[in-house]
Structure formats: C-alpha cells, structure tokens
Length: 309
Image (cartoon, rainbow, N blue to C red; front, side, top):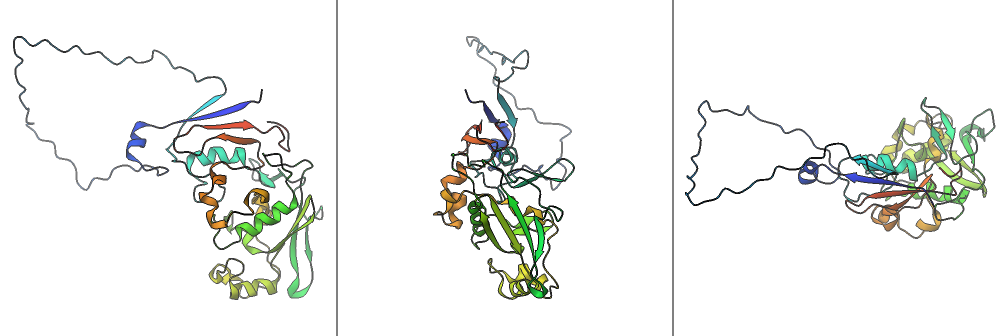
C-alpha cells in the first residue's frame, strides 16, 4: 500500500468567521480608550411565575485528555486558504498552506541546504566553473555567461511522463510571457530568468541557459525584452561586459510540464484545473486538496528521481 500523508487543516472559528480567505488577521485598532461607567446600569429581569419550572442546563463536556489524530495524519492550524492555487512563484506561494505543500510536491533543478549552499535536486550536479558547467562563450560585446544542467537519470513527472530538457526550455519561455501570472522576484532582486537571452536543449537530459551579452543587455533596456518592460532593464542601458546575476544558479527554478501546459494560455494558468490539481516532479503528489476548506492529502511519489520518500 502506498504511504499517504494526510494534511487536515482545522481553522479557528474566529478566523473563519471574520477573515477573508488567505488574509492574515490584524489586531483591532481603537481610536479612543473605551469608557467604563462607575455605576453600570443593571437591567431588571422579570420575576418567574410560581408555576414556571426551571429549564435544566447541561455543562459542555470537555475532553479529559488530548486525543491524537489517526496515524499518518498531520493536523495543521493555519489561516483559511480558500482554494488558492498551488503555483510556485505566484502571489499565492507564500500563503501558509502553500508554504507547507509546495516544497513537497514541487521540484526544481537545485535546492539550498540549511547553510544556504546549493545542492543538486533534479539536476545531477551543481554547475560551477570548476566542472565546466558554468562558462563564458563568445568575445567582446557578444560574450555570454552559460549555465548548463544535466538531469538525473529517470527524472519523471508525477503522471509518469519523462521530464526532459525540452520541459525546461518550455518552462523558461512560459514564465517569460508578459501575461504570466507569476512573479519575477529572486533572492537578489529580479529573478535570474529575466536576464536570460535563451534556453536550449542540448540533449534530452541536458539544458543550457544563456544570459545577456553586453549587446543584448543594452538592447533589452531599449525594447523591454521578452517581457516588454524597458523599466525592468533600465539599469542595463550602459552595461559593460556579459550580465552575471548574483543568483544565476536560480535560473533552474522553473520546472513545468510541457505536455500539460503547452495548450493553456499563460494568463489562464492561475485559474486552470492544473493550478488546483498540479502535476510536478516532487517527492509527493497531490491526491486531494485545492478546493475551499478541502483537506489536503499527499501521496508519496514512487518514481521520485531521488527515491521513494
């Protein structure tokens, strides 16, 4: 039997009654200190009639001890999410439920360890100058930084389809569409993907990302690049040498399935069925969840490239 991790979300009554979905609560603000009367008025109640019988009252029964949830169930007390989509790098990604679920179901080429260093995840190695996967090509105003990744053998999507370099090329082209609903914020300002000139599949398991040369950077400052936003590239108007973002290794963070999203317009992905029932390449797959107040169930992905969790 496949191990299943159930994430049952219990919402405090106060939050569900007073707060809109996904909105953190703020303490109430008072414009003045409430006044307390020194002689409060007490309203007199009617005297009971002689024939009236008192209504019996029963005190609420409280549990005598904590009742543990069933084995394999994780109980989380969080703000109501309201069926927000499970889409990384979107405005919903930092909501409490998404911060718990996305790291389990989503997978990128690299991840960071507790010390902030990069470790290979879907990729076989961390690119560096030493191993030749980070390099400079071309010369003069056409010199570029290239970052190459090789996928681990057997990388697959949670529906069983193989994950290839073509998916990675598609993912970059997808997020660089002007109507992509996600964000382009990275660890050092704008995300690394916005400073790229192209992505190319060198083989089914090898992809290379090429960043702006000096010439391409200055052109983007005039044209706005793929995103059509000259303000984003205003700082590159007088670029000297190739563009080297501080977080260039983050360029492999976008990993989306081409076979499921190629026919979905970028502007509609956030409201699509995919966003509520996504298929990624992470260690767990979403079995149930996404609907408003629906419990979230995650099932271990047997074919996860690093081994079944």
